[in-house]
Image 1 (cartoon, rainbow, N blue to C red):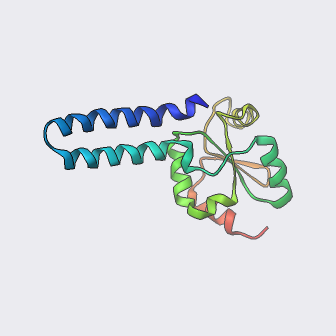
Image 2: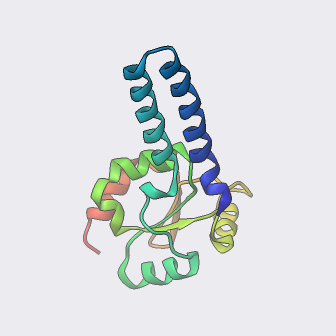
Amino acid sequence: MRRAWTSPVLLLIAGAGAAAGLFRQGRPGTGAVLVLVFVLLAVMTSPLLFPRPIGALEARRRSAADGRPVVFWRPGCAYCMRLRIRLGRKARRLYWVDIWRDEAGAELVRGINDGNETVPTLLVADRPYTNPDPAWVREQVSSPR
């Protein structure tokens, strides 16, 4: 859990430090913009941007029942953020498994990706896809099952 928040907290600290220097130089407008940019980056790299994760076993069980894809991800992953942002509201229709919180999910991803924790990895109809194109994932979520 701590590992998921390391990057966002470091971004907030760095942004606060850089903005403090600008405020001391008498440039409050630039400092405020810098703080806003760092807060936005911190939110984007945090678990807050993603739907609530569930365990790998529960996600696979639910996916088998309703056909929705399962996404294995981890906080701070640029490709996971790209996928999440490009999916928009449709991201709620997928089951998200944080591999840093769920050892079974991490183990499954390592088994699929030759021992590497490469994310995002999707399971669609129990077939794995590593770092798929977000447009293709949108199609999978939109297509009736």
